[in-house]
Amino acid sequence: MTMKWFCLCLITLTAFANEPANKQRKRKVEVDPKLAALVEKVDAKAEEINTMRADFRQRKEIYMLKEPVEMKGVFSIRRPDGMRFDFEEKEDLILIMTREDMVSLSHKAKKASSIKLKKRHGRFVQRLLSDKLGSLTKYFDMTLEEDDKGYRLLLMPAKRKLKKRFKSIHTAVNKEYLITYIKVELTDGDIYELYLDNIQLNQELPGDIFNTVIPEGYQMGERMDSIFGAGEKF
Image (tube, rainbow, N blue to C red):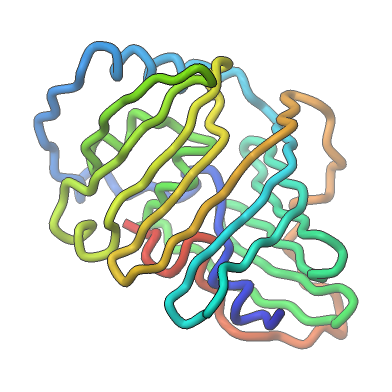
């Protein structure tokens, strides 16, 4: 798999870059009491998390590809240091994101890509996984369904610019109030899914795994988009 296609799959975590408050337009949002209670519990749970490690499975359907593509690996996050996706060995791919940088590394091929993250841009996946779910009510209308495994949220874009990029976002929350699934449908027809399983919280992680320094001798590759496509910024 080329670095270019990998870039179409990647992104991740913390709301390291939030839109400045003076640029945000406030909108009045009436939230269903059950939904509001769930969002509060999800955000409270997130406050308890210093580190997370989980198995992940990523699935993407892109109109340019005949068949869906799946990739697996291990996901790690430590607040506020960053987040990391270690893909299966056959993929030869690692993605690391900090407050300032997003870096992909292919150690066998000795290739790398790196971009600076613009602070003025927010990323909804970052906020879903490591910041506050409630912050997304500024940008999306949410509806709630409950099943035997937990809860399902449907997020529909509420602002015109977002409607040009996103068709819908689906998430699943388990009984422990952890987000275990994200599905992003873009208006161009592309679909990106991320599944998290075997989640482990607040365990010690190696200190240097969020280092974004490119090793010497690595060939620099193409600019990256993200795990959920180029339209995930807002």
